[in-house]
Amino acid sequence: MNTAFTAALIALAATFSASAMAAGEHESHGSMGMSAPAAAPAAAQMAEGVVKKVDKAAGKVTLAHGPLTNLGMNMPMTMAFRVKDATWLDQMKEGSKIRFMADSVNGALTVVKFEPVK
Ligand SMILES: [Cu+2]
Picture 1: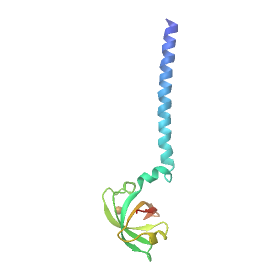
Picture 2 (picture 1 turned 30 degrees about the vertical axis):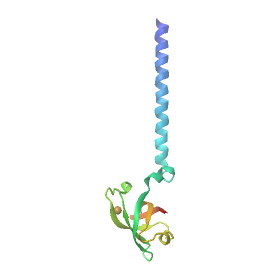
Picture 3 (picture 1 turned 30 degrees about the horizontal axis):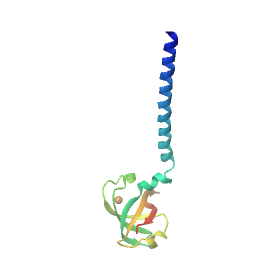
Protein backbone atom coordinates (compact mmCIF):
# COMPACT_ATOMS: atom_id res chain seq x y z
CA MET A 1 0.00 0.00 0.00
CA ASN A 2 2.84 2.25 0.91
CA THR A 3 4.62 1.33 -2.30
CA ALA A 4 1.54 2.08 -4.39
CA PHE A 5 1.24 5.47 -2.79
CA THR A 6 4.90 6.24 -3.49
CA ALA A 7 4.49 5.17 -7.13
CA ALA A 8 1.48 7.45 -7.50
CA LEU A 9 3.44 10.28 -5.97
CA ILE A 10 6.34 9.73 -8.37
CA ALA A 11 3.94 9.66 -11.33
CA LEU A 12 2.34 12.87 -10.13
CA ALA A 13 5.73 14.53 -9.63
CA ALA A 14 6.82 13.48 -13.12
CA THR A 15 3.67 14.92 -14.68
CA PHE A 16 4.13 18.09 -12.70
CA SER A 17 7.76 18.63 -13.60
CA ALA A 18 7.03 17.93 -17.26
CA SER A 19 4.40 20.66 -17.42
CA ALA A 20 6.58 22.99 -15.35
CA MET A 21 9.38 22.47 -17.86
CA ALA A 22 7.07 23.27 -20.75
CA ALA A 23 5.90 26.45 -19.04
CA GLY A 24 9.47 27.44 -18.28
CA GLU A 25 10.47 26.97 -21.88
CA HIS A 26 7.58 29.08 -23.08
CA GLU A 27 8.46 31.82 -20.63
CA SER A 28 12.07 31.95 -21.76
CA HIS A 29 10.94 32.44 -25.35
CA GLY A 30 8.86 35.40 -24.29
CA SER A 31 11.63 37.06 -22.29
CA MET A 32 14.09 36.47 -25.12
CA GLY A 33 11.89 38.52 -27.40
CA MET A 34 11.62 41.29 -24.86
CA SER A 35 15.34 41.57 -24.19
CA ALA A 36 16.18 41.79 -27.89
CA PRO A 37 13.86 44.41 -29.42
CA ALA A 38 16.17 44.91 -32.41
CA ALA A 39 15.92 41.25 -33.42
CA ALA A 40 13.29 39.47 -35.49
CA PRO A 41 10.25 40.25 -33.26
CA ALA A 42 10.74 43.96 -34.02
CA ALA A 43 9.77 43.35 -37.64
CA ALA A 44 6.23 42.66 -36.49
CA GLN A 45 6.13 46.12 -34.94
CA MET A 46 6.97 47.94 -38.16
CA ALA A 47 4.21 50.39 -38.96
CA GLU A 48 3.07 51.58 -42.36
CA GLY A 49 3.12 55.22 -43.30
CA VAL A 50 2.72 57.47 -46.29
CA VAL A 51 5.31 60.19 -46.84
CA LYS A 52 3.58 63.57 -46.87
CA LYS A 53 6.53 65.91 -46.78
CA VAL A 54 10.31 65.63 -46.69
CA ASP A 55 12.26 68.47 -45.07
CA LYS A 56 15.93 67.68 -45.61
CA ALA A 57 17.10 70.99 -44.12
CA ALA A 58 15.37 70.19 -40.85
CA GLY A 59 16.10 66.46 -41.10
CA LYS A 60 12.42 65.70 -40.74
CA VAL A 61 9.75 63.77 -42.54
CA THR A 62 6.01 64.18 -42.21
CA LEU A 63 4.22 60.84 -42.24
CA ALA A 64 0.61 59.84 -42.29
CA HIS A 65 0.82 56.78 -40.11
CA GLY A 66 -1.32 54.11 -38.53
CA PRO A 67 -1.35 53.28 -34.83
CA LEU A 68 2.06 53.28 -33.12
CA THR A 69 1.21 51.44 -29.94
CA ASN A 70 4.79 51.62 -28.60
CA LEU A 71 4.41 55.41 -28.52
CA GLY A 72 0.87 55.36 -27.17
CA MET A 73 -0.61 56.50 -30.49
CA ASN A 74 -3.62 54.34 -31.04
CA MET A 75 -5.14 56.39 -33.82
CA PRO A 76 -3.91 57.07 -37.34
CA MET A 77 -2.50 60.59 -37.73
CA THR A 78 -0.16 62.78 -39.72
CA MET A 79 2.88 64.18 -37.99
CA ALA A 80 6.55 65.08 -38.39
CA PHE A 81 9.36 62.80 -37.27
CA ARG A 82 13.09 63.17 -37.07
CA VAL A 83 15.04 60.41 -38.81
CA LYS A 84 17.88 58.39 -37.29
CA ASP A 85 19.72 58.28 -40.61
CA ALA A 86 19.51 61.45 -42.72
CA THR A 87 20.21 59.47 -45.93
CA TRP A 88 16.78 57.88 -45.51
CA LEU A 89 15.26 61.22 -46.50
CA ASP A 90 16.65 60.66 -50.01
CA GLN A 91 14.68 57.41 -50.21
CA MET A 92 11.47 58.91 -48.88
CA LYS A 93 9.47 60.24 -51.80
CA GLU A 94 6.42 62.35 -51.14
CA GLY A 95 3.30 60.29 -51.69
CA SER A 96 5.10 56.95 -51.36
CA LYS A 97 4.44 54.24 -48.84
CA ILE A 98 7.05 53.18 -46.31
CA ARG A 99 7.38 50.78 -43.44
CA PHE A 100 8.98 52.21 -40.34
CA MET A 101 9.46 52.03 -36.64
CA ALA A 102 9.42 55.16 -34.51
CA ASP A 103 10.71 55.76 -31.02
CA SER A 104 11.38 58.67 -28.73
CA VAL A 105 15.07 59.59 -28.97
CA ASN A 106 16.15 62.29 -26.52
CA GLY A 107 12.55 63.39 -26.31
CA ALA A 108 12.14 63.73 -30.09
CA LEU A 109 9.95 61.30 -32.02
CA THR A 110 12.33 59.68 -34.44
CA VAL A 111 12.09 57.13 -37.24
CA VAL A 112 14.56 54.51 -36.02
CA LYS A 113 13.90 51.85 -38.66
CA PHE A 114 12.86 52.42 -42.23
CA GLU A 115 12.28 50.45 -45.39
CA PRO A 116 10.59 51.58 -48.59
CA VAL A 117 7.51 49.70 -49.81
CA LYS A 118 7.47 48.91 -53.50
CU1 LIG B 1 1.64 60.09 -34.48
